[in-house]
Image (cartoon, rainbow, N blue to C red; front, top):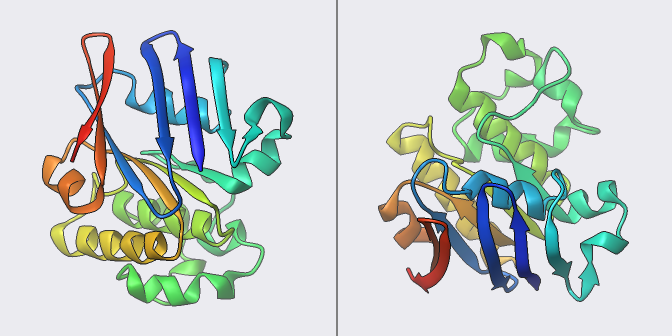
Length: 198
């Protein structure tokens, strides 16, 4: 279980939440309300106050690389540091089963990153994170640049992973997506945070 108690940082209201294995919590609110800041704070990418723990282990007591293997953050605009997708994987073969599931061509691993569409890079970033079998996915607008078919493919894969026990914290502007995937919604607005039923 992921627990967040009185998590605070500049630009975001104090937030308390819990997320069980296999559950999905949608994070919704207008631009600038703190959705991305929340995900980055939980992922230990930015300084923050408060307590974040996974299965009783405090984030502050876990080396950052180890924490991020368990609690994986996928940005709205993922970073890439090599020329092709396959270079970002320890074993590119682990990506193969997921390429078809996310409607990506089998030979995309050798394509120059700079020639891929935003949507292709977004789906590859999800595959890159899933290859490490994280316990929690922190997803920042994971289907923002995608068409309807690709969005459905991502949601199907996320539902499958949740059935296998992966928890998902999902930032989205799409209320319909929140209702399809999430058990509850964390609403951020006017400097306040409230968890409501999805």
